[in-house]
Amino acid sequence: MITSASLVNLAPVLNVALMGFIVALGPLCWVWLKTRRNHMLYLPDQQALGTARTADEGLQQLRSRQRLLLLSQITLFLTFDLLIFGAFTRLTDSGLGCPDWPGCYGHASPSGADAMIQGAQALMPTGPVTHLKAWIEMIHRYLATGVGVLILTIALFTVSQKYPKQLKVESLIILLWVCVQGAFGAFTVTMRLFPAVVTMHLLGAIVLLILLTRYAMAQRAWVDSTLSGLKDVVDHVHRQSSTDSGYSKHLDKAAQALSKVSQSSANVDTHPYFYPLLLTGVILVIMQIALGGWVSTNYAVTACTSFPMCQNSWWPLMNFAQGFEIWRPLGLTSMGSNIDFEALTAIHYTHRLTAYVVFGFVCALGFVLRRDEKYKTLGQLLWLLIALQVLTGISNVIFQWPLIAAVMHTGGAAALGIVLTVGLMMAKSSPANPNPNPTQGHKVGEVDSQSIDLPKGSL
Image 1: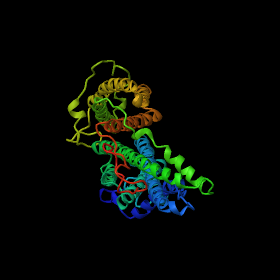
Image 2: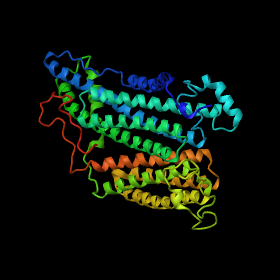
Image 3: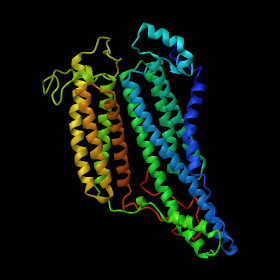
């Protein structure tokens, strides 16, 4: 059995870290293979050699920046998947499937702890410790470690290269935050699913998603700026090259690729009230996620089994003082007595009432955004996601918390946060702070990482 003195056992930490590295190795190899093509220009014309070399260097820099952009995007995607799997872990009561940290009974996997798991399962056949729940919990830890390795790679790559200071600071903040998330993951186990800690762990995952979204968008804006700067260089080399040269095909491909500059960096009129509306949406969604996490961690979903009323009443008996006493063990008050059912009702019904506010605001925001061509798709996504939240939320109540609906409900909330953050960053890049022209003030061919700044407002 696990005692309070052995909740943290660092013996398997290196093996768990190795498993995380193996998880991260797949995405890292995929990004490298995806961007391994050499875009160097080779021209026989000696007169254009100097400009060609400059273009070569610029294209190599572009490939490096695109590689980091792709890595940040796939890390964002995998972090979203990790959040979904974390919800699955919590909803299957697998959070204590391995009751110590970071391994499982001092081993790197449940396979090495087979005897201990069998003993715990013999005492309590349905858990919290079973073979299945132990594997679910450890897979979640492997995935979390893998995401941590990817974020560490992004931070090291960003800091070690000639990248703008804003991106370096952003990457270090993300690295620091994922370390905080790891600490909350450990506290979730060692503090025996303490509701406040589990809720803060969920909120930390949402914040990490927002930070990664901001970083990926900043990277995209910088790559677009690099493309704009290199387009003039390649065009200049293209004019000097011989059309009969066998190497002109390589240059033609480069010119065509660089001409496809993303329109996301273009100056498009943005209504001044979009930014505060989107910021309000982000704040409301985060608050609602916090309330939803509080419902889930206190197992208060089944306190109301009907919709729209609760317990056949529009205002059932509720104990808000107990329900929102933050620092207390699971199922107990701070004084050690069992929490009242009225407290669970208060937790559930508060989340439902605030959901009406969030639903109305997001629907109205989607309507406003759809009237602007630049934000039309964003508005449609908000409508789709809020509809998903309504359907999964109601099904959780009526069908008594079905697993797939509960997991989708968490994923939909996280997706809402990402979409609203994208809109927020789009609105922040306004004509009042236009993107700088990377080639302004430079001769053709002068392209380097120092002359290409991150567009204002992208962070």
